[in-house]
Amino acid sequence: MNLVAILGFDVGGSSIKFSVMSEEGQILRKGSILTPDNLEDFYSELVAAKEGLAAAYELEGAAFSLPGAVDDEAGVIGGASALPYIHDFNIKKALEEKLGLPVTMENDANCAALGEVWLGAAKYCQDVVFLVIGSGVGGAVVKGRRVHHGCHLHGGEFGFMVVDDKGTVLSEAASTRALAEHVALAKGMDKDALNGKEVFELQANGDRIAQEAIEDMYSQLARAVYNIQYSFDPELFVIGGAISEREGFVENITRHLHAILDKVGIARIRPQVTRAEFGNAANLIGAVYHFLQQKQ
Image 1 (spheres, rainbow, N blue to C red):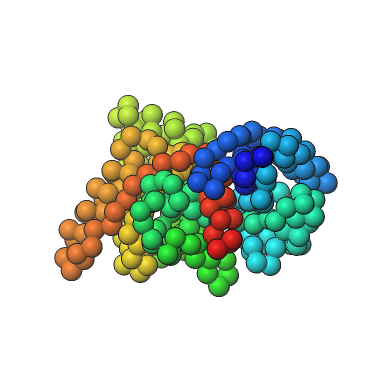
Image 2 (tube, helix red, strand yellow; image 1 turned 90 degrees about the horizontal axis):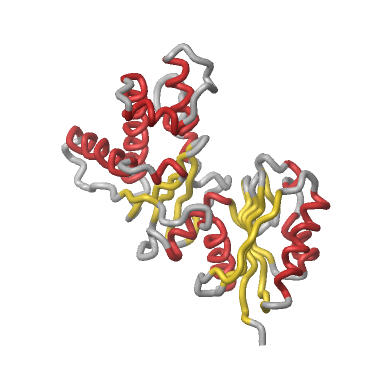
């Protein structure tokens, strides 16, 4: 008798990661394929991956992590992404027909958050905010261990938070891309001349411009965490994205948080901030957790 398991897909702009996972979260098999540039090949690659695994496992369903404004109930992905062919039609129904399995789907950032809530940094928490720092700032709001999508499926879009009177948003002030662009321009270089890693290398070598820009990034993120704490009041903030793995990154956000709290005398709650435990596997784990939640 084959082992009962769930097939997970993490669909990205350049690759599709897939796995077979037990209901306890154990990854039994995994692999990846290049993301096709059209819908028919997309379906074909998913079916081929499924058929290569179906002989060894009793697959009870397929769980998808996808970019865009994912509406699992309607089966439609709104918004925009690097894969325009997945948007604005009932792709969930089509996937169920192609794969011959029940399908659930969720936004990729929400899946990353659910992965941390199920088995990672927030596994003992009910209410969590997940912040992803990358080319922009995104994230997710988790209430009672379930994603809070919001009326317009924009729950957790923290990058849209306004940070000054000019209308600058958090993604333009505190993302890795923004950091690199700000430092490059301040040095009289083309705005795309540096990346985030290079900026931190400059900081380590005593570059004043890089040091000031990084401190401002910490300050902007700390201010966002403070404001979210006193509006949603989560138990924990989990910081994700490759930059979160840098030594001292989360600790420096906390340092700036303490500075804010010292200025605001009436604020007694100290936000708890930690880094994500799962890297690239978080989306797959969270997609499967979402599938299991929908079964309940």
